[in-house]
Image 1 (cartoon, rainbow, N blue to C red):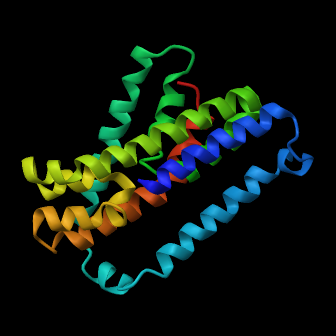
Image 2 (cartoon, rainbow, N blue to C red; image 1 turned 30 degrees about the vertical axis):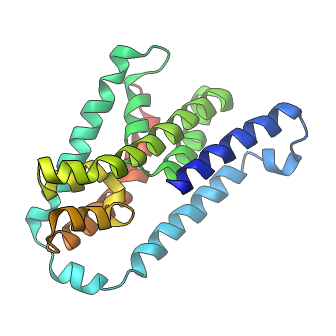
Amino acid sequence: MKGNLLLFVSLLTGILVGMTGVTPHWLLNPQLPMLLLELLIVQVGMGIGSMEHLDRLFAGFRWEMLLLPVFTIVGTLLFSATAVLLFSGHSLSDFLAVGSGFGYYSLSSVLISQVKAGAVGSAAANQLATIALLANIVREMVSLLSCRFVAHRGSGWAAISVAGISSMDVCLPSILSSTGNKRYMPIAIFHGLCLEVSVPMLVTFFCSVNL
């Protein structure tokens, strides 16, 4: 929760600094977002590779475990698609790109601002990236607040799906404590890993098509 608030404050600070016109020119370099994106993707790979007991996770892999992240992806995209009925000014593919963050606000927002800039311009791309940042921050916050409730009312599977990418880190303690069953740990971690790997592919795809 504290991290999300700090990110929101950072966003507001950046907006205020930009409005003053004192932003250093090197920070406005159009190549900078791509460099940050590449570093983020490297960090994702390093994070996955340095996970403890990663070999045990893959050793316990079952093909049925793929179904949960698939259902999470499909459900999230269907829910995101309904936004086109409520909001104007953005296409279906824009909302699908925003939803494809699955709670990974940093990577999805940088990807959108970089990939969409060539097609719609920097201003429109940054606007959509800001929407993605806020939407995915809200998703993580809602996941944190509702994970325990969903686990009690539904099941551990439902709680993992609601958590999105956070199922492998931030929401994992809540999932395990509310279900009282540690067998959900490898499933939750694998679910989060699958979503984390899918974010660059899905966001880039939906930013590149016009639906």
